[in-house]
Amino acid sequence: MAVPLKSGFELDDDPATPRTDATVCFRDLIPHPDHPRVAGISTHDAHSWCASRRAVPAPAWLIKRLDVSNLEPYVGFSANGNPLPQIAYSDDEGAPVNAAVDAVNVLLDALPDELRSQVVRGTVDNDEFRAWSNPELYVNPGGIRLDETSPQTQDLIHDILRSSLSKEGYEKVNGCMLTNHFLGQLVNGPKVLNRHSYNFRLFLPPSGPSLTEPWGYTFFGHHLCLAVLFCGPRMVIGPTFMGAEPDRIDVGPHAGLRLFKREEIGGLNLTRSLSAENQRRAQIYEGMTCDEGLPADQWNPFDERHLAGARQDNRIVPYDGLPISSMTPNQREEIYALIQAFNIYLPAGPLQAKMRRVRSFEDQTYFAWIGKYGLGDPYYFRIHSPVVFCEFDFHCGIFLTNTSPAKCHIHTVNRLPNCEDYGKALVAQWREGGCV
Image (cartoon, rainbow, N blue to C red):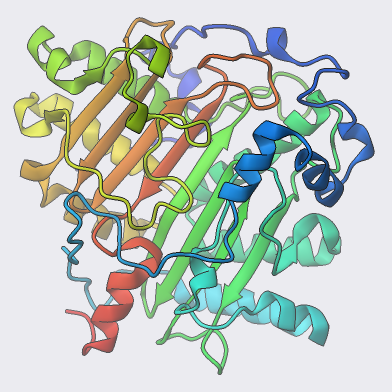
């Protein structure tokens, strides 16, 4: 079993776990109010800020790329272009479907008819369930936008998150929102970047949230995207995107909050512990940018080194790097601990079921690294198997001014290959006669 995980905000306090040196302090990268990245942001809300970015060449092409009005038919993320479901779900994995259904019903009962019709977007078969985006650019409206609704509605949506996520997972999700709010304070753009600049959408059977039929929700915005599906006492959360710019809060009531410590420190310590030969096998590229030798098909201005971000539902990514079967037993356990950290938002029962499935593919699991592995070096890593695709990456600044990857802007993506994204495989199994 993977080593127990603490809350995502406690690892720094463990003296046995070394910190990684930052390449640069984020305080040195806060833009001047007249900097092109933030000029005028204090006068905008999310809608007008997005409209203003359409006139700027770089964001303009990005906005076009984010258009979710014409999604490709779903095939599935895979290693070979032939995605096939690799898992069988149990009849009861302990998903908190009762609590989640109750929380959704409380929200629906509290909403006026107009808002209720806006938040319910059809069933989980609706392609809109796949329409998520992670930049702050508000190109994907629909559902309830939290910063455009009442505090009561905001609280009820947070109750749905609490009811369906683990305690540690909710803390991590809320940490992303709090850090986004902190960024808004740093750049004086609180109406664009805040704790509530996220959209919530429900996908329900005609009769409403069900204890037996598939249903789900999406929650997405800047640096935080979740697709959650329930099918009786089973659930799938994925794909997910979580990030932070900067990766920590250093003042105010949430000072000391630092995101993704488990993934950051664990990944680096694991790589530094490998034998020289295995480091060479894991390190698929040393350079983090095309100027440093990274191939053009391994980088783009939208995702940088990420291969599994938004609009990549059907991407083909072959296995690469070091088979974890070549690692020591302790190193393999660290791989499982990292996978568990990426999935910590799953409640206890679904998380245990997930990790059992993950371990059953040990002989097909790979660890790949891009970058160097000194304490101050930015890097990217991924863990890939028939049921896992976890990515961790240090990025250039979007609001901060660094033009090369720095250890204060983090993106993480968690894809579920072979049709497990959006619960597709689970729903298909349920429709074909139930679970095993």
